[in-house]
Image (cartoon, rainbow, N blue to C red; front, side, top):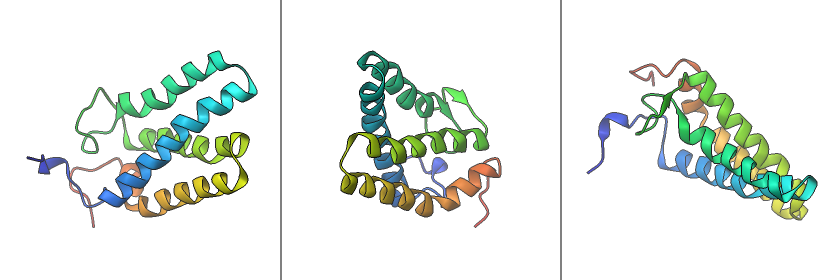
Length: 130
């Protein structure tokens, strides 16, 4: 049974899926690029940072589990960091065609997720305005 009180019109299955795919790109490509540029040892803290930040800092009303309650605008900054890594890192380690696909995925994620991002930037009010 799902918890309907956390469902809001701004986080659709498509936007969640694209956001997760973008995060996955950042989680794989980011540490890989860090290892290629600097050291393989730095890949571990990079992965911990990329996975840990969005996992620990969540906005109430947006996620089921809140470890550290975070204002919506700060959550947006965390997601923009992940999107940046998902756009930049593939260009360092993968062929151009793969990097282009990653950029398109991130763009699609942002476009489809704009209503949620606006909601977060507004402070994630309890009753989303549609």
